[in-house]
Image 1 (cartoon, chains in turn red, cyan):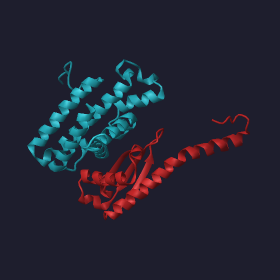
Image 2 (image 1 turned 90 degrees about the vertical axis):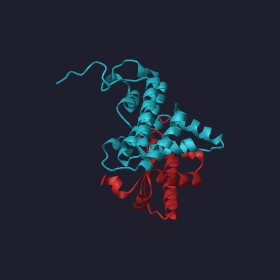
Image 3 (image 1 turned 45 degrees about the horizontal axis):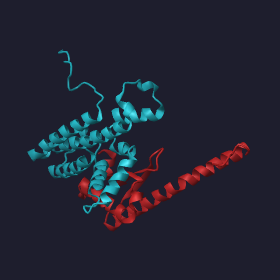
Image 4 (image 1 turned 60 degrees about the vertical axis):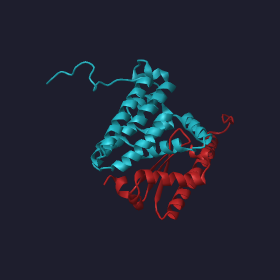
Length: 113
Length: 164
């Protein structure tokens, strides 16, 4: 890691922020690709959806929440099969390891109604 | 009021990995017994117990990874990362968080699936169980069907065989 002790304080802080952004970048890119793939894959299956992706602190993992009204017609296991089929078809196995979990709910289930 | 007898099932205990596996086997049998009734009214109980089986087995893995959890210690003076592990094992019931703490296990599972003609059945089942089950099943007023419970128990069975 670069020695930042000789830099002025504001410069050092800027470098730290830049380094942090650089570290976070691949993670953000993957999250964006995952979100787009899930929305598109579900849409092709006739299921409009909303996808939220949350990074898991101190890891390279992500937790995913998908809400879709049409999940109502599918059992919990069928929803899981469907979303993981989409992930399996669009990402390689090493990328799957970056997904901690995918929760699949209807809007009513997600608000506890 | 009757005094609680020594050794009640309601006593809080810190279990070791083999004890957790024994508990997992017993709760799996309980889940199956409920499934065999074929009554939808028993489906929530069956699913709750089956998910708990996976919780026990993942906790056994974590305790094996962190042997210090089996010794006696003062929780208050644990370092932050160790406190997080302690909470994960003894205060929380979060399958995803348990798995997040076992990245090597998922990696091995992936490789195991790759080397078998049966494919990635176990990892698919594990993902599905983790995506569905929460501790809140025990408070839910919604009623699952026995068909859903049977599918869920089959997935847990597959995961259990691999984790045990």
